[in-house]
Length: 305
Figure 1: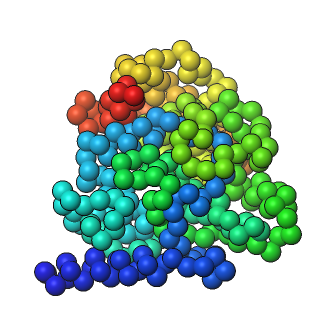
Figure 2: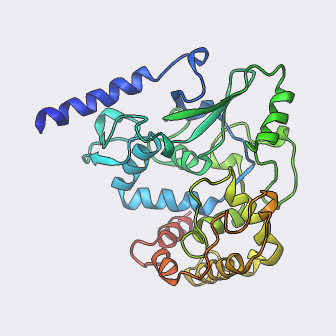
């Protein structure tokens, strides 16, 4: 067992090093180790409260922080860490599996004609890694190449293809259309608008809906477009547990009662988008658990700012 414990961290470290490849060697399905600073956003807004939960949880539960790093790197989860482990030193902790073993759990990028990387999944997780202690723009993550657009002649052609393929979300935090030129050029929460509806979609998961097996890209944003039509989140106190409970409750009931064959313009029905048939009160109570609920971690962090 001792021998195995020594070999696995070294094996994982060698895999990390080998994954640092030249962009010219990448193809669809490749795994690349990159600093967060090299990833360009494809959406203008995030749900700040979702990131606040992650940051609050990381502060209170270091094990969760390392576990999420392992998962993002396709290594299933954390198997060992110590009080001296550091998030930005992969050799200081041990994950369950080698990098890329669980490729389905990894975040995705596309490669543009200019050779740069555009993030198509993981804006919330990677913003949390950017903001966390020992994170930042030089924090390295493993990502999967989902599509290679380098054969296109111009960046204008690239963005046209991105829209057609559903690989970008060109609507701001108030639901209004923007151009690709208005997208943030870098990760870091300060570069993004705060979309409260996107946050509520995260917290209403397992209460009024859940992700289907094959979700469309930007699934929560499509749902958000519908929720905006019937719920005004300005009427809720989103700094208190009571206010958040009511907001999640109302959003979840709204989702459950919705009937649509084209949720938010996604081309998908409410059932295909993960709609529940009944309200899950157990899921709501779990979120508000006073000791370890997601909303509890989030509010503690958010209200400490």
